[in-house]
Length: 351
Image (cartoon, rainbow, N blue to C red; front, side, top):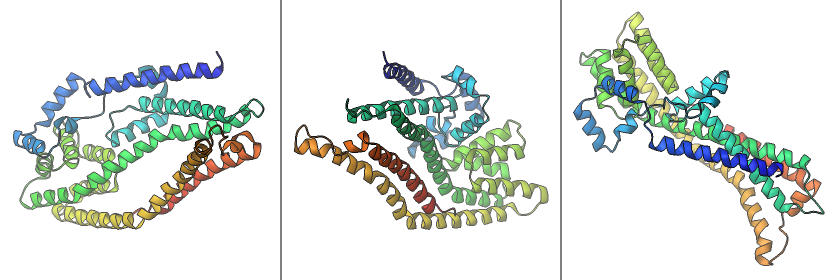
């Protein structure tokens, strides 16, 4: 068995483990029974609030879901635990409200990388001929480029999940702050308004305020609970709210007026973000179009000759079997990636 056969066997075993992990995640409890019981006691959600959430089509399991506490790859996780970036990755997964653990994400990224390398090798073998073989020295740059892109795909998807959740949170936050402001003006305390938002607010804002209320009820200092609140969300709006409440408790002043100002500021920022998103829509679609255009035309150019004349050589074959063609293909892939990232950076404007 050659080296590629061994890699295929290893890849098959890794995919089998990944498949078993997926089955386990699908049919297992997100938390241990003890954690689930403690969480149920701490929530103290009223029956009316639960009925309202069900009427709105929100599943209770989704609201109570937290990051899974068990490790399905304990040995691999133990090896990675000594790396500083490992803890940061765990925090990013929590911010994305993902049920994956950092070790599993890294493992799945490695599986994708090896899969991309195997597929790339099969494609290169498709164009390689006995008289004009593609040497290993030319295969390695393709392996590094394609494998590196595949390795980053799960992390890019993680960023997408974070951005999607944050947009949903920011969309409901101004209304939630108005509820807090009105409650404070009606004579309620800050903790009472937090409990009111947790019971009557809309997810995902109500979920975070519910967790904030639980932490304070369990004896965690308000400053620590608010800092945890801002860290879990990871947005400027959450940090602004937490900092304002803490400063008001130390210096005094009307918290209702402060919350009103924060709500108006957030509402204005969301309006500006929406305008920027509309203006940059064409640029974002241009980036994806320019990235996919060479791939689409390459597939057409590769399959069209055999479709027109059975047995004809693919038009892309010179790109793989000649030295100049391989240089052009490799440089083209790198420039496509750099160009895509560049265009995305141009159209990404912080509001």
